[in-house]
Length: 568
Image 1: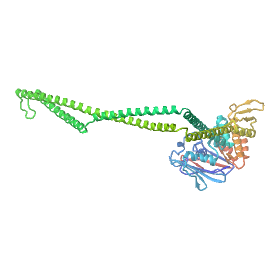
Image 2: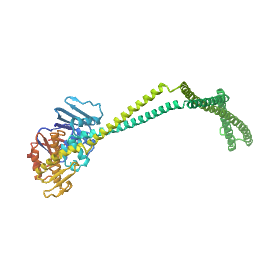
Image 3: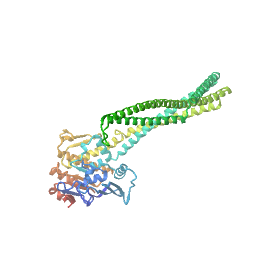
Image 4: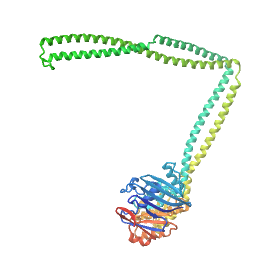
């Protein structure tokens, strides 16, 4: 039994920086009234947020933060479950999530998702869907049971009947089956591999006994072939070493060539600069008749002398550049030859390493062949060979036994999974409770003067018959009639939960139920049902205060003061 004590919030939706607190176990029936936008329905979002980290209405979490203050959103709820006092605190900006049992806060080392799962599964014993089917009913965003998918209906009923554990067990068995299949495949592989080793060992012993001479000759031939191959490969190694010796180069020579190339390049650049300077001077004398510095006239003879002199120097420089370029080409060829030889030496070293590695492998194999020949020549099959065969056979027998045991386990798990599927033990339990559920539903409908024969089957499909045996579905009825069905189902789930002690709680909150679909007669009938509840605290949120205010033990009025919601 979950007994909710109180809930309080601040900086939540339209509530300001002062806590709004509602005592949840104060009166059997409480009416919550107020103008539109005053904050009457805030309690629904506050409870859903603090317990399940999501609002009741279809809004985002960020919209829960008071838009004026912009931070410091806190919701706290206190309740008693299994004689333990529990407090849950959840906040936004900054984020906060604490679960207290008595004066001790539950360790928060786990991640937020696991912490939430612990709250729902280990403390509350219900999730968001169950909470919104059994504890609160709203006229706006609430999805009634009859409008849920078949899968969602099943989950609600499983939560109420406290048989969700079978789904968890089925999930665990599914994973176990997967692991068993892998183990069986591994066992089969190891068995096949060991069986092949047994066959090979038996064949080996048989061949040793029956074909000793041919085996010796075959092994010796392999030995000789390998030795010949080793000799050839050693010759290849020597050839590579000789090639490297012939290709050896002087590192100092390479450095000298590179330095000489650098100097030649620098000299060529200097000559190109001198040539460019003479070209500019020739253009100057060709294009100017007076000196720009002294402004004295330049005679034609002076111009001609300067141009001829500098033209001669340019030809000399060009000849020098040509000589330099020829020298550069020669040195480049020398450098390329050195680099080519170096690359060839590197490739030879790589090839040499490969050959030496293959020689080592062949020599290792030859050692094995030599030992085999020695054993063959020494006489019969050794005791070790027979011991090896016996060990392999024992190993094969053990692997076969393990494989058979795993297959037996798989059969048992398959049977268990079949029992734990929706069509198995869960359906049997649901069938046991269906008569009770249907009786309760029809009883509540009769109490609200809605006389039909309502039945749901193990697949949670409804059959509704009138007193004249006409068959209807939920969709055939008016909104007022649908509301009566929704209320009857809500009360039924609460009654069944109380029987099972699964999601049994003192709290029931109904949001604007009387403001939409229920007429005056339906309202009176509904209130009669509420008055039959024992040890429960029912909260009704409504605009119809004039019609309802004298029918409730307690009244809470919300109002807006300076754009902030508060209890009047």
